[in-house]
Image (cartoon, one colour):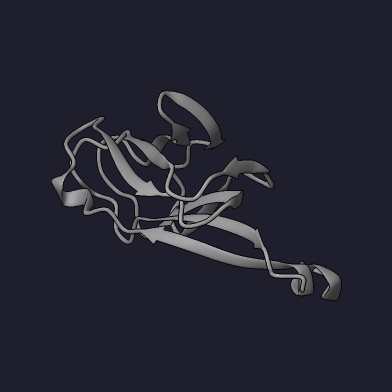
Length: 128
């Protein structure tokens, strides 16, 4: 929770991704690539999904990367209707730099619904 002073000094934004799990094969690795929208910080990486069913379940790995360097990661999860977070992080980003999200799924029969990834960010507001 932000204090009143933090809300005055910083603006919070987020980017959401909703990959189509039905197009992913067993144990596939998928990357979402995006440009950092401003100079600032990434403060948290999260993902969640609805029903997880099938032979082997869930997300086995999810990380935010700059090139091949991991900046933040979330734990594996095979529990229905659960959000998993990296916890608070402070990753510096520069406007226009390329970042990517690497996701590895453990399911073998495309049985995850409502899969969503969110990157939370923060930037300094004008102080003039």
